[in-house]
Length: 178
Image (tube, rainbow, N blue to C red; front, side, top):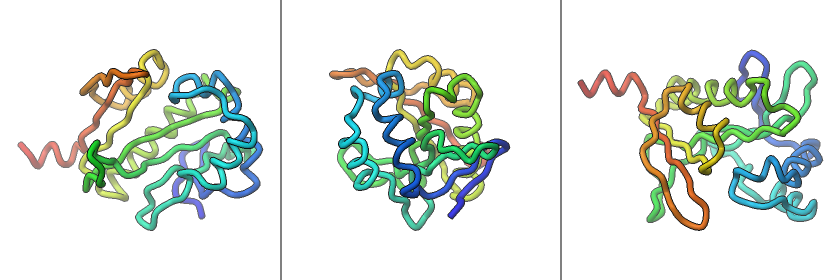
């Protein structure tokens, strides 16, 4: 099932044919550098693919396989998933934006295109009031994408690893609040 398309990308459910490309990303130290972890072994990556958070909910929230239309190659995973409170539980009307692109596709604007497509999807299709995103401190490329899309930095979370927390309010909701 294709959930969304942009100019160069399509977003669909993950398929078993995606496992090798998924594992290659999970095993790449450069890709994993800013997602809070070290490279995974192939067995760990495959287990994550089969059992991990790639399932998509009935409300179309989830992390989707990201496919380059011109080559039909799996280039990453992107999407909107439920925004959870620190105490647990889903924040109604909100979602978390995720974009994760394989290194060989960096610098081509694909992450920006994917993130922008999902922001628009969140507003128009899902009727979200707010989208949040978390980026590891030091990941300037992802920070740049979020700032370009209009996200505001709302917090820096310190811990074993430090993260920036960004938020974007639905413009339609902003107007209604005035």
